[in-house]
Image (cartoon, rainbow, N blue to C red; front, top):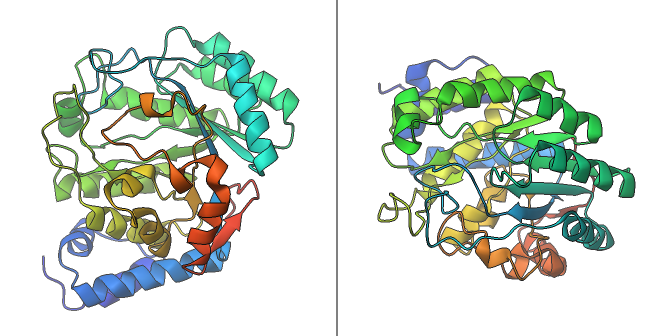
Length: 350
């Protein structure tokens, strides 16, 4: 549907008014280059109004490359014979947190596959240990689908936030990306359970995943409106060796940046990261995301010896300013575009 003036639509989104499905379609497909720039500029202004020119940092600790699942897009899938496997011990993770604390990080993000060894009890113990050692820090988990009892246990032990991308709201598209042992409805139920457990909850989707259409993206946007997450993580699909989608093309950087700007207008207070996937596909990808309305970066705190092994997609960026040790380089990169690191916890605030 071609609408008379897409700038009116952008202003409607900025004003917090409801957007119909055909209007989302126009915003995703019919904007001119000038309209896209106006959208980007407006999104950056909204982010600055809400958060200033500071970009929150989170220390990413990739705790395990083992996973029970066989998601067709992920390099860590159980059936990938090319994957390099490792798992960190509790002591390893606590050392990463100590290093992060020395560097000024106030949020730790524990991310890993659904590892049967790092089970619910083990994770609860690790969270409790981090909370005891760092009572003022924020603890975020990104460890997949767990039971509601586990989510409550993690929360009680001291975890504050949980990231679980829904990946795609369309059930048919979900079944194209995942084996029959997984279901879109269970993923959504996990997100609801996280909300019930009191987590600041993050969701999101891949952009340009195999089979994805504009209609699927509209499904995603409408689902996020229902969920009202505190965090939204999106990034371009990147193929991984040893997976069924190894030969597929990567997702579009421009479409990802467009969606970041649209999400910033629709969810002005939400925390939106400039993802490593963008930095992997383009050397300016992360900076472009900040200028499009993103306000979080997650430098890698994992031991250097394992960073290349956490290969969820090919050629994942791990060095330079993606590395927690090079925090000064990140500061300089942000300064060059008029931003700076905000070392605060960066909790969600309306």
